[in-house]
Length: 256
Image 1 (cartoon, rainbow, N blue to C red):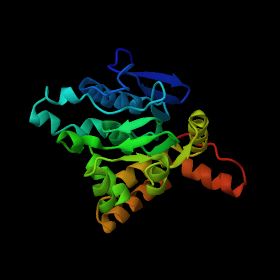
Image 2 (cartoon, rainbow, N blue to C red):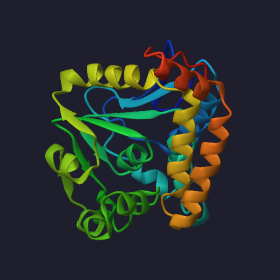
Image 3 (cartoon, rainbow, N blue to C red):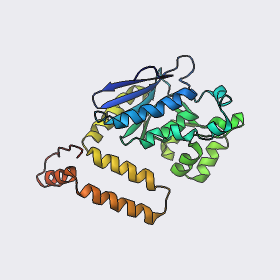
Image 4 (cartoon, rainbow, N blue to C red):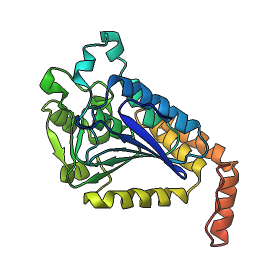
């Protein structure tokens, strides 16, 4: 998994870490990187040795956004479909954690919104500044933001193109926790350790049900939840969980 345009991938046991890294350009995400990130997420999803994915940026920054000139090199049809690649963290069945510091602008925020968890440093600045160059967020930004924080708040952020600091991001629920930058790695490791105690199947199913049904009618969501519940009822992990609960011990999940 080498030769990526503007990012690197490292493995540490069950954790795969994707690091946006474009020195001198605040880790800008090129058009090629969008395609490659999507492919890498799919590859990690298919790798049974990987249980968690962490998405972060190098040199104290997440990313200041996309390669603006690159948009003019693609056809209107091509740019109309940019949201698919940025949805890759959402499609991945493994938990994906966004480790955020510094600038989280444009496609950077859109990528973070497609992740499952967002942990941020106090110096973080989030924003969707596309309106300032005569454009709108086009990789899921308008839709995920509105669904996450409400229509009025999303309009205030998107239509003004304004920046959001750590305190506001936490208050809006855009991030799950804020901390000094030197505490980010420990927070990510702590979250991974916590999640690793749970059944991989249950985590994957919870993610799938939540992502699939959150913008649909309640009755369809309840039906999907029920079907997933019935599926998990038949698994080894659930049997083990019930048995461990009764025996007052920590369960040993296998993902089966």
